[in-house]
Length: 264
Image (tube, rainbow, N blue to C red):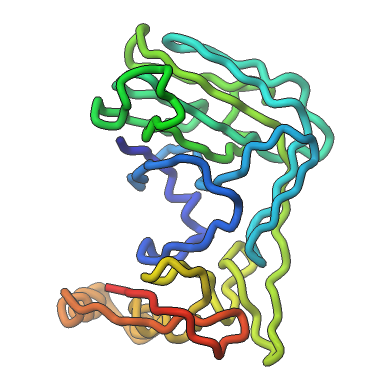
């Protein structure tokens, strides 16, 4: 299974080497993103509770969301348009939970995002949807909705493709970074910049933080500041091809080591 995403949505992300912590409860998901032109999905997972205005804890610097309306759930076959109802005051995004039941291509709203599902991604029956590896969750910006901004169209490559979608109006705002006793900021990179300590998942599965400077040294960001041509970048890549740098991962205090993060 693969999905496509507009490069514009990658502006707030660092190199794809980094696996940022998503501290919201995780739903089943096995999506593999393919970066391409014209997608409408913004990666992000939410617990899916139905209590309106129910907040969840997020990493400092991450987006906090609150449900503002009753979720709209639709099960359909083939292409269909979903009426979201009036947009509540303060709603800036729509949270989408999508489960396909047949192999094929499912396209989402305006912009050309596509979810390509193969037979291997499916458990074999709709009744087994709880284990469906193709199920995915995403946040949609209002401009990716249909004209008028209160409906959303899912287009399928075949009229026989079955699917279920749940969409919910939500508000979103970026939280502040945390600050530890040493005065260092920690959390997730966002539109405002990068904290001193960046949230990652260590190779041992523990959540923690890496120093921005150490990560930049490992991923080539530091070296890139001295590049004067594309040839300089290619030379750096050749020099470091096949190497893996083990970057220490710390607790938010920036001192207690909890693991390591591999860059390579």
